[in-house]
Image (cartoon, rainbow, N blue to C red; front, side):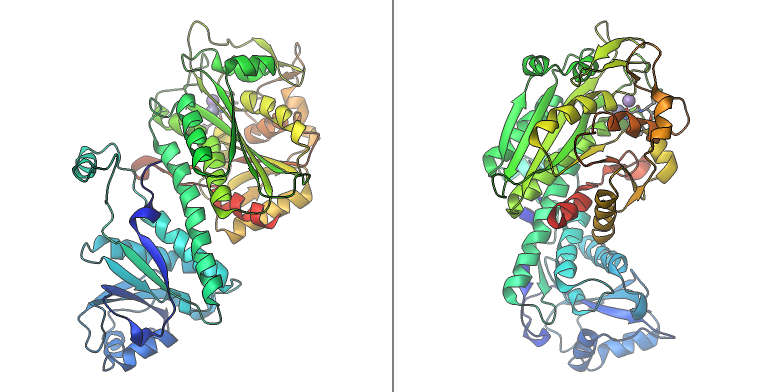
Length: 517
Ligand code: BES
Ligand code: MN
Ligand code: ZN
């Protein structure tokens, strides 16, 4: 959409020994923490040897202990061709796992980005062994974490706009000083495999970034029509197929529950279908369904004002699906993947649904809308019925569905609901592998009675108890005809408060899942 971080920072491979470096502003050297002093890695030992023991002297001084995430910038070290050396702490060698590795990369990126004079960096962080992770993972994660760390959403800052305009660019220009990062090839990795892994990290980062951009955009810009246009443009630029369903077509499809949510808004609703046909024609697709409420005021059951602005993020499920489809398309994965987005705005008005309204869902079942703020499930249920036509291998919906999920799991884990144990454990594994974790919560018939309605087939809310579970149970009633899982990302899709920002989660989890399933 805008210039991506990967377009501003060129990431490439370095396949030579450490003494062959030239014209580099900064090299990143990993060190472990030891009993009293930091512990050398093999790269650190090499640098030490041709720098008249410069590293050893620093370690003896006690200025750097090697603890995880610690950094120290050294200038003009004799015998080293790079202008600066950044020592990067990995913590104890025996506890270096994937999460610790990612933390070290992030620390190196953020300290490097602070120094405006570093334009070209070279990382040797890939020269270590990480528990339970292979070289491919190490490379990919180094790349995607680097790009994620450098992401800034500044298109509405006048200064950035002016700088971009001066260079003839449409939007924010070079707000990143670092222009090139070379990553040294891990031992025992072929040149081809290494550059494939770098490329794979870039594909993931590009998807995450699109998801974050869409989430961060203000709700007066990121309307349902805007998401439709982004999806169309993405399809034009890649091999994706894009189908758009406007109000008329949604009426034809009898998506009465979805349309009921949209009817209070001046913004027209859309269902968007992006398809990637990378697999055999008859292979069952993996289908993703995203909640795209571009602003959730609550409708007539209006929300309190505090932090209501954050309800612009209520389309993060849709943003996840669109971003993920970008990664899917760019990677060229040989599988069939379909992304479905249902997007509208939830507003109070004279035409809005009222508490007590009974609507007809696409499934033929009636829904009593007791609370217009429980709108996510109302738009998703019709999409879940719609996707039956694909005879999917699995359907996963992604939604900022319940405040209760934020209370239960906070911003650490995405809530995962599924009656399919195999699918659930594949998603949990994918979350662990991608450092984008999910935690399984119960989905059981015993909760269903909480959403029985005296007048319609189902009510759209239960009581205060088990709010995330009853929301999942509602969706479950519409997802009986294929293996299905529901991801509640209300706590993980964005950060609140002073660090307010979309996270791009759970794109990494879902990309890992699609790659493996
Ligand atoms: N989009 C909200 C859920 C939400 C709230 C996500 C706060 C992140 C932070 C959803 O549409 C909603 O309003 N859910 C209600 C359901 C309730 C009325 C049963 C909720 O969680 O309060
Ligand atoms: Mn709501
Ligand atoms: Zn909502």
